[in-house]
Image 1 (cartoon, rainbow, N blue to C red):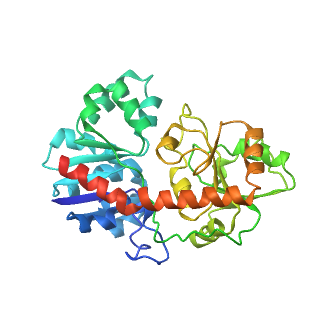
Image 2 (cartoon, one colour):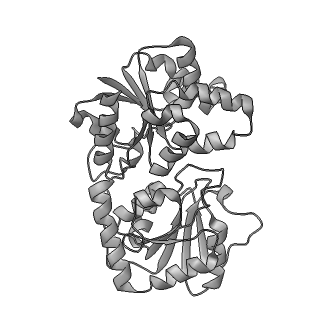
Image 3 (cartoon, helix red, strand yellow):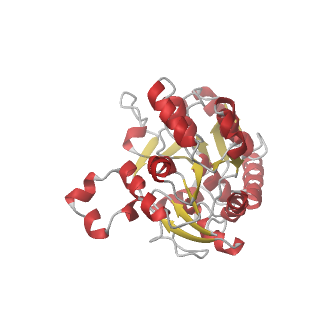
Length: 352
């Protein structure tokens, strides 16, 4: 089998392929482990659709995210199987021109896209026709599978659950010597920092670090003096913050929110688990696949600042923090490594 993995921003220049280097393999979605399971795979990013000289030119800058993925179709035709998270943009040419390759979609935000377009009949019918072109759709949660099967019955036999993986060899858990900082991380549109800021106001004695993008913070809500916001920090600095903080608060919008990925916060959740960092997370449907409440993480209802305060107060107990962190690390290493993800993907690839 000759496979092509297409990821929007494949970090080939940063990942060196061995444990203990400067960048985890998490964002490769198991690609670097496929060879050990007998799959000959290549990796492309969206920028590989254009020659380097054109990419740097003014014309190249006009070729946006969707069009670059569409153009990758011509390279994908040479493969037996194509896997990636943005393959929806290749499907118009696949539908028009065909080809031997089987396409397997990694469902990062498909459910949200379909829900957001539900009120647009023409676009919904077009998207429905593109879905029929996939040989399989890999879902990162059973909630995604249930939603898709309920609304698109023709997809039922094509839906597969494979858990997201994290580089558990790159991250080393630390259980002692952490500082008192409460960490929040993520620039996905599904983050709810408004609730976290409101909780920080209620806990002036606590210190919070938020790592996000400017668009994540509500313009009308002031940042309390006990909160430090970090924009566009180097990955090495973020890694140090994971290893120093006392706990992580993953504050997200609920499942009805129509922005961000389907499983907003999933990568940060697994990063924290791999680092031995205890987690407080807003309730979302995908969590049941990844953590056990009060065993691997504390789960609270969304949009409730006082629930955030209550969970943080519970984690002032060192014994509880240690128990959650150790349990979560074992769970991540056992069930959610990138190698485990690759093994699950290979089973899907062979099935199609």
